[in-house]
Length: 126
Picture 1 (cartoon, rainbow, N blue to C red):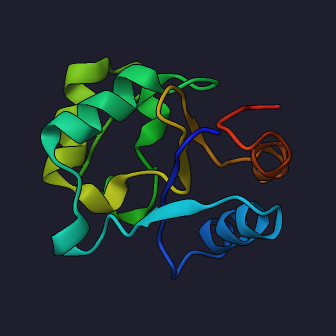
Picture 2: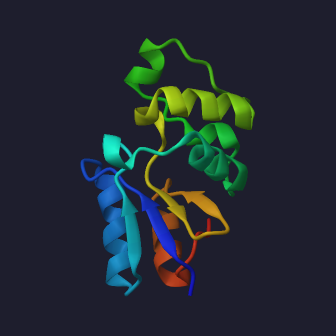
């Protein structure tokens, strides 16, 4: 069975839903609260996520929220190096939740993906 790691924000209902779905399906999940300084992702870890993301373009790892707009960022179509640089500098912009099964990385939006994770026990998009 794959080792599952969830990039998690406990203040995000979608992220909480993902964790609940995985645990209710009986999967052991390592939770990475990436916004905590002690659990922040290193540049190499962000690069690994960006290189392995499936089901979405790499720029989808960047949340398009108020902070993104306030920073004046334009991430559409960016490649791995640019996405990594933005997320290392602004870790709060990392999309959530993200499931890493050690091979594939999938963003948990839209929510139906989370049910697929729970059923499969790995990072899948459908």
